[in-house]
Length: 242
Image (cartoon, rainbow, N blue to C red; front, side, top):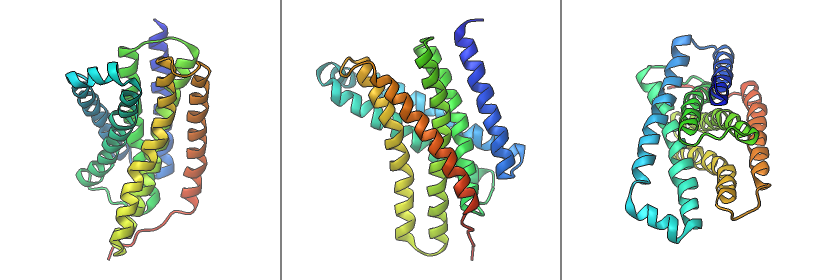
């Protein structure tokens, strides 16, 4: 068994443990948990296909050669971070609609977002291992951070989705739209920053030490996500349907 397989097994076991924890904390059934994780899984596959199509376009290759910094910005902030968070957002909504699972509280949406993040993170990790295997210690930390940060960003997005739903049923459409936009923009930017640093290092635009800064940022996001997760659980907003 190669170190690649070991990495993948460890990360999938980690994700399974988080899935079990989400199910218990969120008080939802195994079927519901698997449903949301499955939509994250499907969303990751669709994103990977879209991503490959984008970077198969001739002008994109020319952009990388002629304007590498602009290419990195578009790659990281748009093609990766924004599209990833967009597909997670769609995963939560599809899970709610197709599974006929109502969002009763904002915390429900947070749990749903975290579950979608699990499915997305595992698939994204496997794709990375296939396309660009690199059995270094920093790489392993980055891959663990990738899965955990996907979960954290999914939970963050779930919070905004829940608040969007809350303001919608309360009749405040303006606030609802603000929450909808924030739920895409904030996780996307936080998602992009460490990846942006990693890409700058890879293209020799900044010193290699910045890879560690990327790892620290990812760890910080995960820790903040855990703290906020339990804070949101204690102060969850109940959504009253008329």
